[in-house]
Length: 494
Image (cartoon, rainbow, N blue to C red; front, side, top):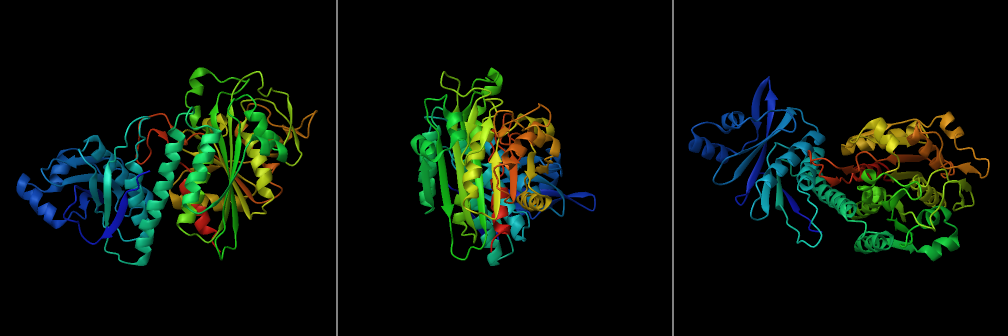
């Protein structure tokens, strides 16, 4: 994967192809932010009016999402709406991404050197700007085609020369690369990315970061008693895998375990999904892609926290060998589960992985999964669900999400949903009534956390965007939750 370089500068480099500037409100009046004087003079001479006047004539607005590219023969000037003058990192992230996507629509003949000139000084805002450019430039390369890059370099203009500013750029490059890797995996067709090939990709990328990797194949899974993962994979000709990746830097005091759902394609199994609902189910491995990429970013940034990842990979297919509703499955660790619906397969592979992760005695367990359509019904397509063992743990995740600029909303795990898991033939049942399905799934997973502080991220809504791109979110896989996990790891460093 090509990684775009990013640098800081106190002025606009001479070889710039495009400069992104902001339009904001100052005392109720639109004003351009930090337009380089040389460019402003040149454009004013050429047009006989100021760049601000030209931008407003072309429909530029201060609201977020507004983007206008001024017609020039030389350096393109991209005017993006910033909203209020006191901008947040997320406002800048979105504005810069919209500017980059506007440049992409012009279909440049060669990769561009884009300069971001928004009067940026604070490290987190600098980081947001760089992330916006790198995330907004993402496109998935069609199968059999050569990659076509929009950017060759990004320069962030800033008066700050502090180490924190440079660190912010370094973090932005690593995080954006991790998000875009996650997007690539999610967008890969399921006949190319399946448990074995996905595990191989995880091994290859993790070894580049000098991480310890272990892959359990179907024989090792059976020997160790991973009944949930095996049950889900029974109907497929492509056997399941469990990938374990560990990062243990010197000086780490805390241990974070990340668990990801890696269903490389979900037909629903015997409880077959409707055809239209099945089309996007290559994205059902988004959780696994996210946690694998997250540990690689954490390692690249050298964060002082131990991290262990478990990615549970299987393909859920209908066949004569597939699991049935009402089957009783013996999970890792010995708990027996009555399977209530073969399309509730994610919680089975996740429960196995959670049970194994507790043996590592982490300080915090976080699982990430495209787990329930019920969460999408509750929160829509742009907000992910958060359920946790306690409010303090939930607050940790919400603080990390806010710092990262990602939208999560806490949902409860109520006593009555836990009562739905009572089974007459096993230790518990894997589901219950239709209503509150996201809560029921979380209540099931919690049974496998052994009392360790735990948070569950249901990303079923925002993990895959079936609509047109917006801000820094492309069509297809989005890579949501990775930035939150990295921010969480940063907050937990010893």
